[in-house]
Image (cartoon, rainbow, N blue to C red):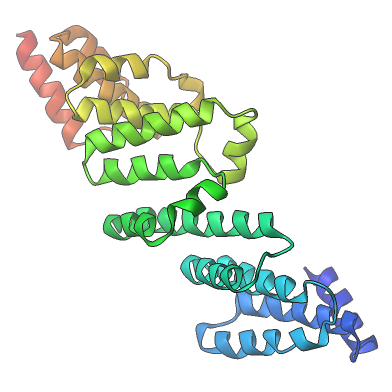
Length: 274
């Protein structure tokens, strides 16, 4: 950062009244917009956008909207970034860099949903799906919308809808030509984690056979210690439902971090064994 700030500052100093100097100034102000206090945000945004008239190059307006909305995105203002992109996209006949708009709009929608789920604002997460035209979900070509919908439904304890969303996501994901690259690009968890979420949803929906079948697809090396605890707990509950008491106890003993639920499960199984 210190190097590129140095280059941009030097460009502003040497070429103050040129297009290059204006672009360098925009780049510097972009960084300030990202890092500034909230009370200075609008002043810096107005300052940055005032340089657009000096950039007499093709698609200068697209360059500026990308600078502005990328800055908003970096501040976590996902809705503001998305809506600014959409407003610009709608007012021009056809942007030259249409794919960049589609990717950024899709990313902004996805991160709004992620942010609401992380904050346990599930109603707001579902509203994001309603707020945007279905066309944008298709145009962005992202696959994480299905996973995020499943996660929101699972957290809301609407298990049939979670099951449907997870299955639709997995079907789409496995058909990708390079699923691992897409997973990394979209910040998706490993597919084994999604299988764990699906298995948990099947368990909560009393579909024990399907829960067991999905668990069998999980490679333990690909999930964290916390997720292994959840795996063994789900597996133990399936065993309890099938009255496989010894197997249930064996699974519960493998849970590394005990809690009230685990203690009660162990006590229930021990009582059944007697």
